[in-house]
Image (cartoon, rainbow, N blue to C red; front, side, top):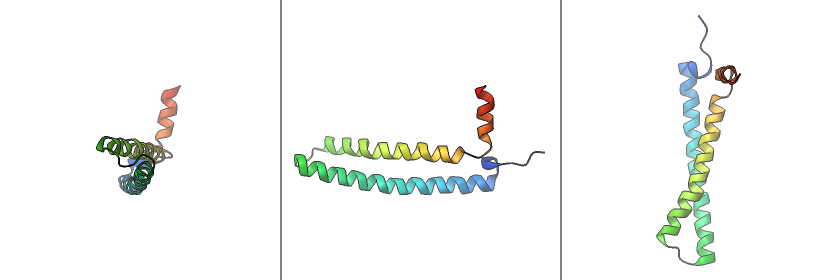
Length: 92
């Protein structure tokens, strides 16, 4: 029987997902800081912002950072876990 590797191993999978969630929490903090800075700059340039502009800034800046972090984290999570060979096999 083949030894489980990467995310097939329950202990490693739990460790990897914990690390992924921790990275997302740090990126959430970075997104909140970026949104705060963007709102401050927009307020300084244009004056008081409407609630629509505030929601657009939160969605635009925060959403972009969190989407990039999620995709980057999933790419790192899956690399080197033994699943890359499966992808290469199906690519042929």
